[in-house]
Length: 184
Image (cartoon, rainbow, N blue to C red; front, side, top):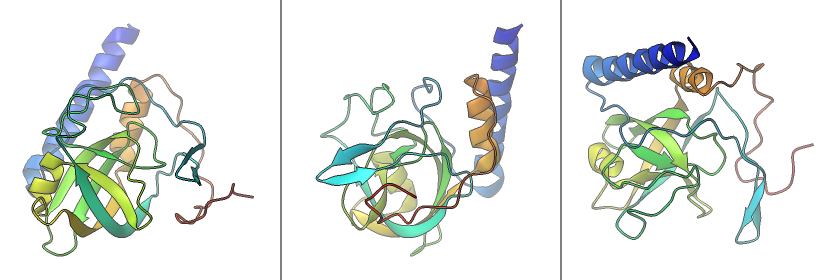
């Protein structure tokens, strides 16, 4: 029975993602199926500490970059094989998977992607898109774009429930992105 419920939830998510993509012209997430729901522990990269946490109200504006062939076929932070042609992205702190809408503020294009990796680790960037995501957003050749990243709460909660993780209370107040020490 649990297998049927999981399959039903995954089917509902697929329909939701397809509806988002078709009704608004926004490509939906694709790629290797997720492997559970991972928030993760604090970690350090280049002397900076990152504090992964669930933030279902995440809505930020900043710079997006993209990563491609150098990482294609390698393992992502959640254990998947990175596919630069899938609609996925890396984020330094959001759980894996989290479903986000990324909007290019320079041309108005939007995509829906699934967070399945950690990064970017450059001070001024908030998300690292797959090549497919960058292409759909229209910044593959430029390499960077000013974007808005918004968590799609219901789609993310569906994935979380499908992974067998209970729903949580509302998120704690946001920690400023540039903050390097532990929240108090």
